[in-house]
Amino acid sequence: MEYKYECPRCDYSAVSSRRMSPECPKCSTLLFEEVSEEDSPLFDSIGKAAYGVLPVENISRIGKIISIDIGTEKPVYDSIHNAFDGMGYDAYLRSRNGRYHVYLVERQKDEKKSIFSSPLMYIGLFVATVLSTIFAGYSLSVPLVEEGLMESPWVGAFSFSLGLMAILGCHEMGHKVQSIRSGISSSWPYFIPMPFLPLGTLGALIKMKSAIPTKNDAILLGASGPLVGVIVAIPVVIIGMKLSYVVPATSFGEEGFYLGNSLLFMILSSFSLHVPEGMSIWMHPLAFAGWVGLFVTMLNLLPAGQLDGGHVIRAIFGEKGHLAISKMTVQMLIFLGLLGILSEWGVLEGIQQYTWSGWLIWGLLSHFITKGGHPGPLNELEPISTSSKIIAALALITFVVCFVPVPIIVG
Image 1 (cartoon, rainbow, N blue to C red):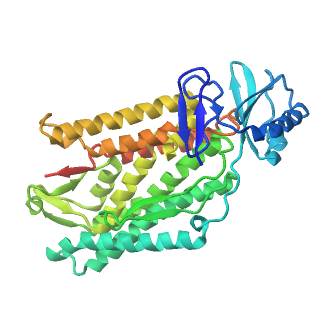
Image 2 (image 1 turned 45 degrees about the vertical axis):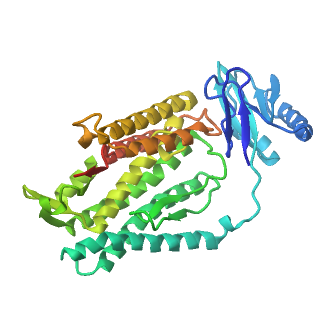
Image 3 (image 1 turned 90 degrees about the vertical axis):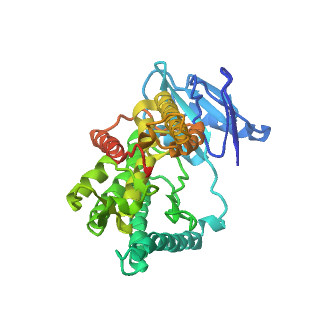
């Protein structure tokens, strides 16, 4: 299903496959959502219910979105939730210009059971991803066997798959457990097999089926996956680096591929393996799985759209702050990617070691993710707790220490 939105005040318009915020991300005006006339009788019943529950001063309607002005006295959100939850509406409580408003957005009805919600689908994708990561690990291990560094490629194949699946699985289960704790309806993890890529997978994801209740829930939901994932990735990196091989730097030739270091990976590597001058590290597949885990954690924490990092900044900086930071993130990634392309073409010589064209792809992906905005929590008035602030700070630190300016270096 597609939702079409237009702002009656400015030129903003959007088409999204998911529900957007009821407010325009540019000017905060209530958005117009395309609606059919057959829904009108239901809106009248909502108006009658509101007058009996809230100190209503005005009710207006644009499309399917009901705006209820409840004056200057701060309401109790539970009473709002109880009034409209049974009618199939999500109630967004907002404070605008010193007044409180309730925006009612019709909740998506439960879709009929399909093959995508079948346990066989979850299990099948998981098994397929295990097999595709084993295949990727085997491919990574063959050169090690040919150089006499590893006895069997199956050792590297299974270690790579085990390490990467453990990180991805724990990351997604961190989100799943937190969604249950927050009362958010969500799917089980969908693992994405991709046997034709060096990693064997495009990762995993969980589909959120209901709105986020509070800003605290948004922070915990966004940070839970990356923080759990990085906790698992740390021992994977340490063990993998201890199993890695110290070889002459000339072993890779002029066209060898080198992985960039994040601050955390550099620290863990220095504790795990000593590399004499003139030597380099040929990473064990398990160490590569740990590197990928840290890199994926950083990508998920990018402060944009509805990525994990996007949930956190939406809770802390609000709708306008989230939009500004998301756009800045997209622009920065695209800029870095274009610099990387120019350096590869020889236009900007001397910066090849400091740029990466791959950021352009992530910038464009982030752009499409950001276009739909972020609806924010239902109750935006509840303050952020001290514990949630600490979790948000840990997520920021994790992003910084896992960031890799140049993930891949050639030669």
